[in-house]
Image (cartoon, rainbow, N blue to C red; front, top):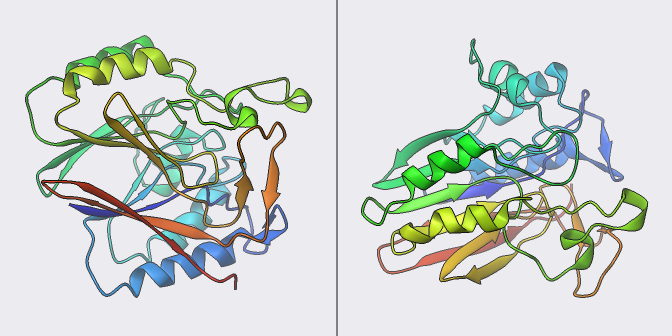
Length: 263
């Protein structure tokens, strides 16, 4: 099974909206064209959240017109800048959207579970007790190979502003606030779990914890510097937009990053 992971596109209400100084629509259009030009097939494109900046219907209509140009099916996770109901309704055309957008699907023999970790318009993520119970029911020892997707990192990353927040933002973490319970739910499925994929941090991270791969995709518009011991977030405009390619094979999981020159 092979998929492309994009993340943190932050589209605005108009095609000239600038996110941290860069036109997010123009950058995503470039990424869409690059994915469509790939000389191989993938099973789907995964968008791991923050499709838009303010969670409005206008933004999702604009996103739909652009993202439906992809020649592969697109699967979405809800980010902290997203509105779960409008994402389902305006972007996906779901007439009766759920308050939290959780779902599973199968691709080439691999079971994929997408969890809505949105905690409102704040940087930290959360899962409800019902979501954790459903995750425990899913993560049994026996079953098909499994991939888990959510927006917020459920493991600690070695950058203080991500893990602990910063003074100007009330020291609010970027992490999933129930990471310990989340990881405990995964534990029985360790042997069949091929990876947990997330976004939110505007950078490619790979972490192995308790024998499980946790991997994030870079942003399609701008990365954030996240060095060890860095206590304040800082945009990194010198770093290009990018996306990830994930290949899940019987013997291993491979994650590649593709960076693109700015338009």
